[in-house]
Image (cartoon, rainbow, N blue to C red; front, side, top):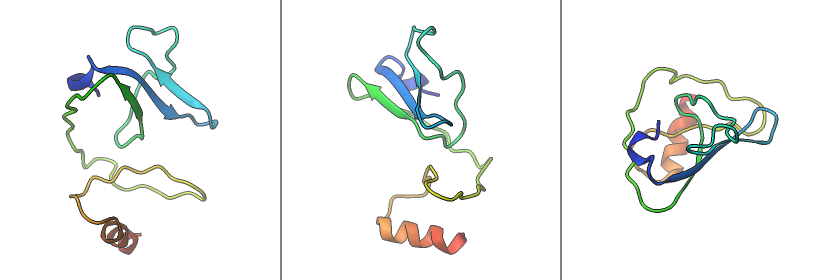
Length: 93
């Protein structure tokens, strides 16, 4: 998933299902708890500098269910003011 930026990535974290954080460190499988990532999954990436990250958008899995409380989503629309983007998303829910 991070192929184009892999030389700059120091660590990847994501919120785990039990509330803690899963982690991945390059070259350290014994310390890593992330083995796969899914489309639109929220990741916290620590890098040692600027690196391009080329992504391919997928239409698969474009529908999702909001749950009570916080839901992590990934906005993939074009750049626009936050109020406009949220209003457009709200009209679809």
